[in-house]
Image (spheres, rainbow, N blue to C red):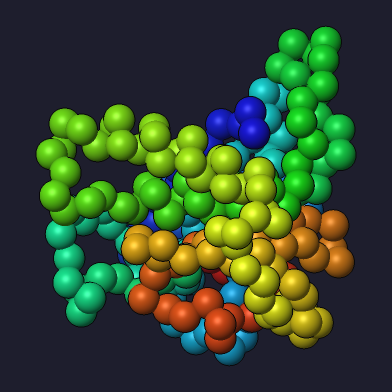
Length: 219
């Protein structure tokens, strides 16, 4: 997907509970989206936080991520007990036709594969094999990103299994795979968007997804 991602960091509230400007900017990207955002349903009662939105060349919001649980960090070496418990939900607008940056051509339409790829790359961004030298991480990340794309382009392949999870209360099929770094899944909704998710320390089998009623509450 030819989009640019704009990181939106969590910002503390100012004294008196007022939002600081960076927090306002963070949620503004989500508010510009013409599609509904998805997160874990009400069964999840832990922390929720905004992550980043991805935009097209014209600035239109095409996808974004919402985190749940512990905010993950890149760690070279962790034990099972030290690993954060988190799940990130990626919402991707279903765009059958996308124009190139110069307006003269068309880009590949977004699909469930787009959600799977974004989720796979998202998981990689918080992954770093402990035995690897720091200087080699960029090369490793490039290689793994290409692998994530190849896997996302073959959702019916042997690397994926199927998993049924509730979306707005309706059982919905998802493509699902696990690795030593965590899990990734992707599917579509009746709201006209594709949903991807990734995480570790939290079982994907007990998750449910629902439309976020008021994204401004995450600011």
